[in-house]
Length: 103
Image (tube, rainbow, N blue to C red; front, top):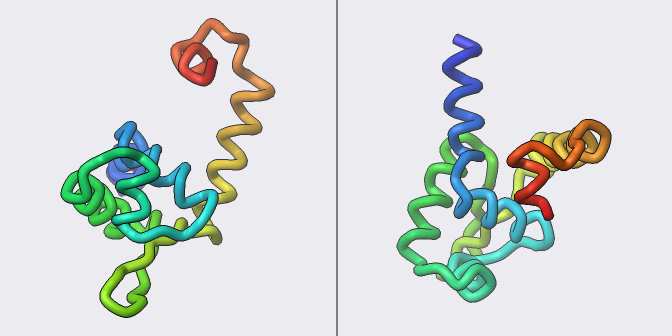
């Protein structure tokens, strides 16, 4: 069971678009329109990615008027992101693909 859970969870984080969404929502809550402008992506692509992130409670949505405002699950996801950053800072020697991508 856990292995499948890990696969689903980390699969959600494996998408560059989803990571961009998570990074943007780390800064502030946004609508799909706001995300589209910030990330220069089509709203339909963002909506599909947000749907997957919502299913795993990585992001939450609330309705404000006619818009849905998306926010990062700060209770669980934000601490994971902090841990990843700490891990990379302490353990990444610059020779792995991850380190090269961080530049």
